[in-house]
Image 1 (spheres, rainbow, N blue to C red):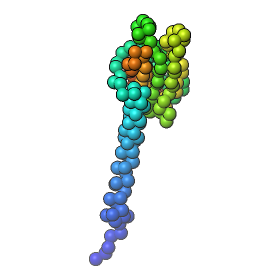
Image 2 (image 1 turned 120 degrees about the vertical axis):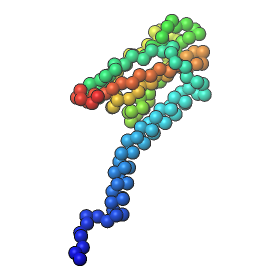
Image 3 (image 1 turned 60 degrees about the vertical axis):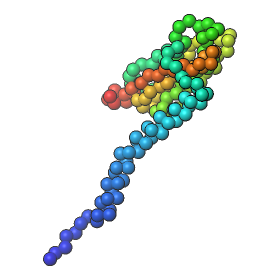
Image 4 (image 1 turned 135 degrees about the vertical axis):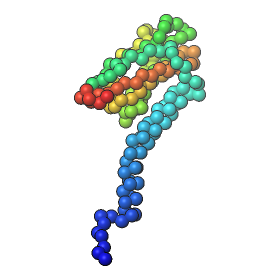
Length: 154
């Protein structure tokens, strides 16, 4: 009886399947780590307080063509008074290598509580803005931004 020649044995085949499965899992693990790191940044900024939705407005485009600069505006939503005044602002983007995109502090003499700047986004992700108010509360808002590389990545 003639023996067949095989490309690999059973152990090698199992190792190859396991390696392929690991390659499929790694991006999900990276996203999970990024989510955890964003959560840590949010908890540190909130300093034990529970962030509340509203009070601030985050303006970003829904879809961005390419990984170029993106216009971002964050402002206090509603009238500013001594009781409701933004003292610090943190912007976090979980899909970028440097998740802490921007941080601003406002003095009482700063005037308008609004920041307009440009940020770069590496991939489709959620951008979160946190504001510490003068009464000690922390306001949070976020927006998902799609980054379409060359207009094809939907």
